[in-house]
Length: 367
Ligand SMILES: [Fe+2]
Image (cartoon, rainbow, N blue to C red; front, side, top):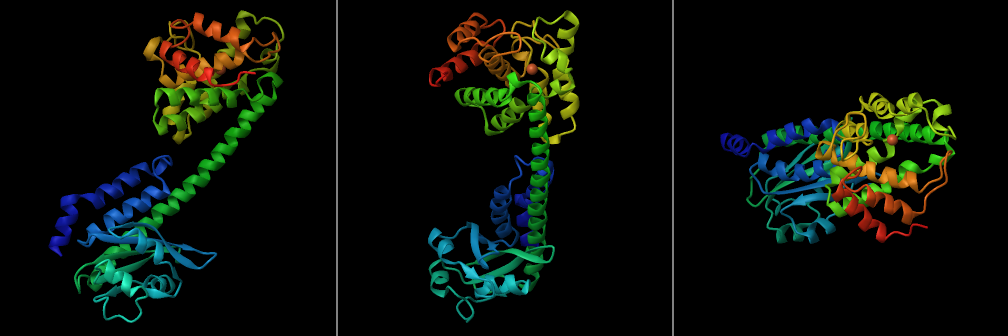
């Protein structure tokens, strides 16, 4: 026992895994279903001082168990060893919802893939169900190369671990549901804003598409690109608090009206500040009207003080605004808008962001 515990402590993997996953609980971008599964087959064998592991999930329509992730097994084995519920060891474990410990795989009759097990040089195994609200969602199997490697007490360790996996998976599912309902709420808010002004319909989507093209050229991380998607869609959400009369005014805005429009980034922050998953994107929304030379709003930030995602959105927002009709003016041609962007290189726009954007525009039909 002490050897096992020492192994776990030495590697610290189990505790690292649990605390890392628990930390990421609220962040659905990082805590994914696949990540939990992959980490599980890494950690489970360490707990039992073994090296081989297999995690199967139930396909409830077909009533079969298929391997989703494994460690130390050949692809051939994991592809081949699909079992029906009630069939073979994993199938039995799934059906009875209790662990099974096999001391010697050569002498057990109910082992379904004996030849394949022999090929993998497996001599013992322990298989536990992954139970969620008393229903089997899968099985976790750890294999040994020696006869009699696992004891009954090992099944308690592995069962506890499988229970933790089930809770994490369930939480990810719940978070995904909450997240999707947030996104639907947000989408309907964006539509509500854009529906008030026929001229800006589809604006957020276009701003986002251009922004993602820039992100590709600049080599932004996946996390940044995901955040850019949200921020691009939401950057003008604060306009929901601005009067229709000002938003749709055909003529020039007065000082007071301009000041009212300029509170829309702050309003967006108010609306979105409770959304945990948007936390790192809030500064991008708040500062999308800053200028590279410091002449923008709300804070007059300059250069790299302005968050990168804000500099990107600022650039694509200006381009889409210039190339779209507005209540007070007709749209500019793409060529003319590009000239405007170039004139403002290093003034309104970050030169690197702008160069990346101009590069992407070459490949896009602007008609
Ligand atoms: Fe804006």
